[in-house]
Image 1: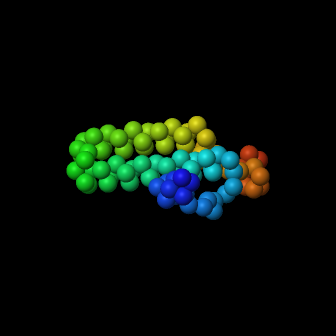
Image 2 (image 1 turned 120 degrees about the vertical axis):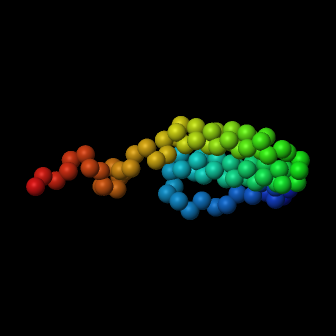
Length: 92
């Protein structure tokens, strides 16, 4: 059963910055891509009308966008751990 699940829902390894929110978003992004692929295949095969495929993909996009916002991905361009924070810029 696990082999079938891995075949139908493969996951790629994550190579980005290892933070819990990044890893959760990556999982959500991979799921989004798989579902969009399924919808496209159904539409291409004539099993789903184009307008319904569009609606489903739009709904999936909104879910991904909400996930990004809830996880705070991309909100803080400066990471204080890097030492790149501009909170106290040099005077001069």
